[in-house]
Length: 427
Image 1 (cartoon, rainbow, N blue to C red):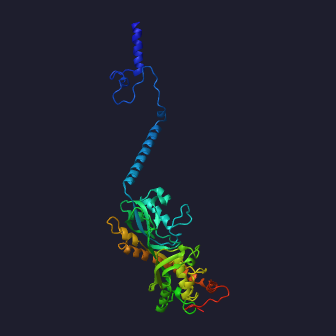
Image 2 (cartoon, one colour):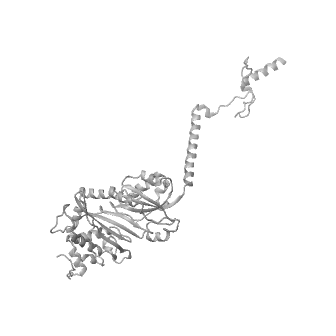
Image 3 (tube, rainbow, N blue to C red):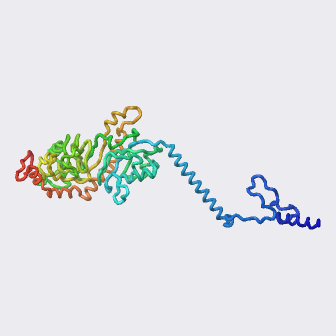
């Protein structure tokens, strides 16, 4: 009886611990669990159950590795977000220069990839450089974005200013420019007040219009090509006509969809003149500069177009004053190629905040050398090269005879009444 009890006990030990080794005795599996062991041994006589995850071999380990890696990525992205949260987010203005050829204007058309704009490239660079979150690029209102001027298709700028909120990262200008094409540059950055809006705070805008001087060649006697040279007398006449634009006038005929009695059609021109001509690549060119509080769509191009039509002898000189009346006048629109936004002005803002000790005046004197260099490298050569290749001004000039300026003048005088001639009117 005692023998059977001993044998049963020994069998239970062997089943639980395995056979004995002469040198080591019972297997270590039989030892009591040490501190730090994850699992205790199964009860005596119990069949151990295998972990279902262990049946897949190393794949279970791979799954653990993937989960660990994903957790690491979450921690990393979380640390990046934490780092950005620590960066100051401030309202700034950016001084921009760009060549507008090949772009459908400045303003971005969200959701339309068919027409590329300057702001498409700018917003992409801001996101890639880490200045703004990616979702701000999808909705520009989130960064309080505003531009001083909404330049049209093909129009360039040497002094465009935009306002927005950004993270003030290190080397911010270099990083933004590294993601921009060479014909778009950020030329300067300044801090501004939190409520600053570049469009509303802008007091005036200065544009230049570059054109070949043969645009002023008289249709009946002068040569009509690049060999033409502008005389001093013709330059004086051009400037006398341009001076008529100074002051406040009703420019409803110089834009579209504006009625003669709309208050917004009245615009104030501070200054306008044509500089002395110069020669580039065998072609003589001149630059017209115009400074005004604000401009309507196509206004400057039509201002230039009407002066050219008068100087060439297609339109009577008195048509300038008649164009400010209520009668509809067909004002020709010069090509967009030569138009450049040169500078924007913030005089009232500078008077209030420029010397308060907290904010910088919006004066770009230190950036002026960079602005001039950008114009000489990317804007002027593009205008000249395109004019020589595509002859946009020459082709536009060929359309001027199609305008019936006399019929417009007669309509202004009333039915059946011959319009009185004005000094300088052509026959």
